[in-house]
Length: 324
Image (tube, rainbow, N blue to C red; front, side, top):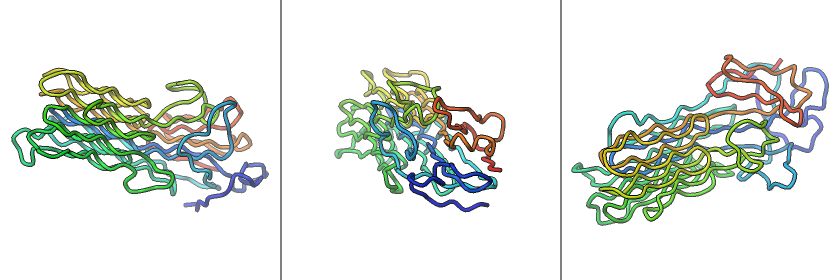
C-alpha cells in the first residue's frame, strides 16, 4: 500500500500542478459513526469524530472551516481502503447505549461517538454516565443518585485539532438526559438538554449537495437529551444531523441521527427505546488536474466535480480509492 505523508499547501506539487503519475495532495473530511441512545430518559448520542483539512480552498466572505487541519494528505499511484463508520445501534431496549464506529482514511482516524445511556431503573448503579468517544454521549437521567452524572468525554482519544466535545451532564432526579456532544460544542446539561452543534464545511470544498446553512454544510451534531420523567420538554438535536430527544411517556423509539452526517441519536422518553446513531462519511477533494487519475468503488460511492473544478470523491459506504 502506498505511503502517505503530510505536505504544506504552499508547494506546487501539493496543489497537483505537476504532470505525469507523481503524487499529489488531497483534502479530506472524515466523520465517524455517531453514538446511539438507550431506553428510559436517556442522554443524546455523541456525534462521530470530525476531522477535516482545509489547505487549498476558501469561501468568499465566510470564515475558515472550524477545527480544520491546515495540512492535507499526499497520495500516489495505488489503492487506498476507506472505512465509513456505522452508527451505534439503538434497536435493543437496554439502559446501555452503543458507541459509533470509526471512519478511516490512511493516517486519519475519526473515533465513533459515545452512546447516551439511560436511567438505570432499579439496577445498580442508579445512574449511567455518557460514554466517551469522538464526541461524548449525554448522561442518563438521574435515578436516585445524589451526585451529578457526568456526560461522556469528547475528543477521546485526543487529536489536534479536537475531533469533538463532551456530552452534557444531569444533576437532579427526573431531569431528563443530557445532550450529546457535537463537533463544535458540548452537549447541553439537564436544563436545556440540547445536542452540541456540529461543524460546518465550506461548500466550495466538497460540492453543493447536502444540508445547507448559509455557505456551509454541517456534520457531527449531538443528539438532544430525552424528556424528564414522567414527561415534559426534550432536547433539540444539534445542527449537523443530531436527532431530537423524545418527549412524554411510552413514545416510539428515539429519533435516529441523520444518515452520513455522524449525527447522534436523540434521547428516549420514559419507557421508550433508544435510537440509532447516524453513520459517518468520508469525502476526499482532489485537484482538478487529477480527475482522470482517481476513481471510487463500489458504485454507491460517487465521483463528482465541485463548482470550482476540483474532483470530489464521496464515500457513503466503505470502499476503495484508486489512484492511477
